[in-house]
Amino acid sequence: MSAENYNNIRRIIFSTANNPAKGFQLAHEWLDSTYKVKLGPKGYSGLKAELNFYQRHGQEFKLTVAGDMGEHADFSGMYGSSATRFDVTTNIDYKKFTEYEPFMGSGIQYKVALYDKVNFEIVDVLDLAFPKCQGCGEHEIPFVALLGENFNRHGMPLMHNDQPTFSVCVGCQALQELERNIDYIPSPSEYFERHATGESEDSRVKSTEEYCLEQYKYFRRKFTDNLMGIASHNYKITDSNGGGYWSLDFNFQNRAVSNVLPLDIQCEHVI
Image (cartoon, rainbow, N blue to C red):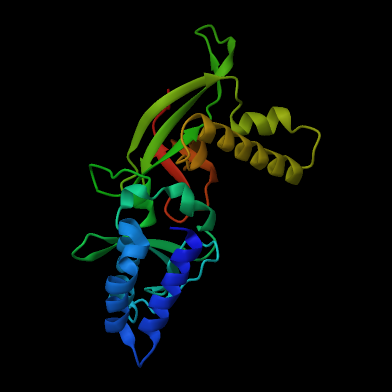
């Protein structure tokens, strides 16, 4: 079935449900008796799930039916105190994080309503892409660290850097290295010092930010679309005697997860 025909039937069903003189009972009857065959198994299952979700949670989430406006959502409403878009699905395996990412991080969050044939479960959109930490159960989000230049045992530069890819748990901040790339890709601080000279301080900062964004795009193509950040390894001094700790600081975070990723992660030397 074409998207146009599906959307026409969808409008009829929800217009019926919203009509006080007709209501949900008639909407379900029409969907089951008149449109089930026209929609086909997949279309019928999807629209049935939307109608059930709307009937069950319409008042709770203050739902309004979304039109075909390219926003990748079936409904808009409120989740707690936050404006939220809802997408209803009967199979979460078909949903990909990259489909939602362009709409995330701009003030309106996304939730996926998973219909399991018995009950609805509201699933955070991060579940679509990121595994769960075995320690605390929160999400593990991948990022790349751009490390400083490597040297041999005589202190001579080797003209290459390491770029390990890690996952970090947004709950317990446990780190796990996933893979490692070796190439001459300067760290953000090296770029700032060597490749943005002759510019004003503000220009050098902006140039370095653009450099980090370029590397993010590069490693996203090289590793995975679910890559969410660029980090660098820095030593943070916490007392006058030079004491402190090593950390991975995020130079760039994808806005879709910037509200859950920490600004920095305390760690030992990243070898």
